[in-house]
Length: 343
Image (cartoon, rainbow, N blue to C red; front, side, top):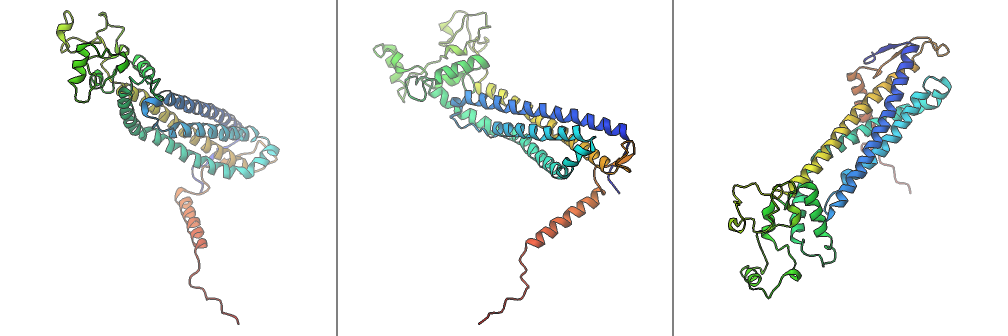
């Protein structure tokens, strides 16, 4: 007995074909959106690749671009089939392709599911890449004359301004590195000399942050130097006063940005899976309803459509038996007689 049978007349078949045509072209639009998001995500990763030590994975955006292109092609074909379904002459040429097409749609849905899982699982790798990349970016901030790092300062400054963040974990990360190049230090100055010589590694360390850490919304002029020295500023206590620099670290800010983007993409891909499944079910009903018409010459006659020709258990058993038969066919018959040697 067919699984989930539905009776159809001409009006119902026309409505189903029209509704499916609209759904398929909605799926094409969703495919274009997935393709566009893949390109946008790839560009966003490229823009900040310096701060990730060029270790960022482009697997997700590349797969999004591929899935978007496949979605457009597969759903455009489905829309064309639905458009021609009510014309017996036009539908006849599509009929042999429908079974392989539905199998291909099943495979495409599996790929979409893997794509959605990647969007959620790759976030941990993104977090680690940002942590290590930002740590090195702060270290190389001063190397504006070093090939390959010339634009690190500009990239990091623009990131801190755009994402309203400071440092890797927080603004104190800048206290642990020399972020001012030696070419801008007056080595004849006793204070500079003492600060360099007092450090084991010979670095010029100070409790200051770059200008890009300043919060322009603060009513007080930006305090970016001597942040932990209360006596250096009037009416100031770094332990209690809300500092007028960004207190959130860039790792947290960037991870929040990228993870939010990946979560949104994952949700869109899941929606696409549901939409594709609806399209497949509708197309199966339409095809079976057209094939079971009592009198194909009379478009007014009734017909019956279904999702599966047999029940779920029977369909699964048939599929399992086919797989076993295929496996046996590929095995070498070890019990056969060996060919006799001829002299």
